Amino acid sequence: MAGRTLVIGSGGAGQNTVSKIPDASGIPVVTINTGDHGSTISMADGNVEGCRGDQDLGWALAHDYKEEICRAVTGYSNIIVTAGLGGGTGSGTIPIIDECVKASGARMISVVSIPMHFEALRRETALRQMKKIIQISDRTILFDIGKMPSRGGGSLPINKAISMADELMKEAIVRIYNMLDGPFFSTLSEKVYTIAYRSSNDPVKAAVWAMEEYLFDADPRYGKIIVTSDSKIGTADAEAVSETIGNMTGIIPEVVSGEEEEGHGILLFIPISYRSLLS
Image: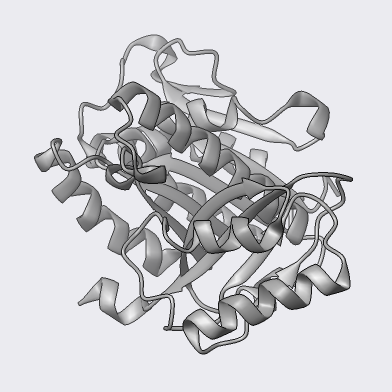
C-alpha cells in the first residue's frame, strides 16, 4: 500500500494551494496541470498553456492522461483534490480523477474555490461546475474567494485575499488529512461544508470570531459544526467552545483537538444544505 491519503492539486490554483503544504509534513502530493509548471503530471507536454476556461478541453486532456492519473491514485484509501473552479484545467480534470478514484475503491474529498464577484463570467461558470463536483465527490469543501477581502472587518487587496485563500485552503486540507486517520466520514457526515478560521490563545474567542467569517453562504444552524484546533484543547476549553457554539446555533458541535503545544488556530467545518446548492 502506498498509504492512506493522497493530496492532488489540479490546475494552476490547485497547484498553488498544495505548494504551501510543507515538505516536513510528510503529506504525499501530486500536481496535474498543463504547460511547463513543474507539475507531477504535465498534460500536453507544454504544448498547451492552460485551458482558457474550456472545461471540455481540460476533461479531454485529462482523459488522454487517465492511465497516468490512475497509477498516481493507486494504493490510497482517500484522495483529497483541490482546484479553483471557473477555468478549464482543474474543473475538467476532477471528473477523470473521480473515475480513477472509484475504480480503485477509494473515496474523494474535493476542496474547491469560487472566483470573486468581479470575475462575473468565471464565477457563473464555477457555480455550474460546482454542482457536478458536489455530485461526484464523497465530501466537498467550498471556498468563496469573494468573501476573503472583508475578513476581519477590513478590505484586503485582491492579491492578498487570493494568497490568504490559498493558505486557508491549505490549512483545511491538512486538517482533513489528519482527520482521515480517524472516523472522518462519520464526523463530517454532511456532504458539503465550508470553513471558517481564526486564531487566538483563547479557543473560545477564536471560535466566536470564526463564526462571523465563514467562507461560503451557509446557515450555521443547519447542522453540526466540527471545531478543529491545531493545538491540544483541554477538557474545560473544549466544553466552553462546545457550549458557546451550541448557544449560538442550537446544535452542540463536535470538537477535534490537535497535537501542537500552544496557540489555537481554530478551523470550523460548517455544513451546507446539499439540496439548496443543487436547486
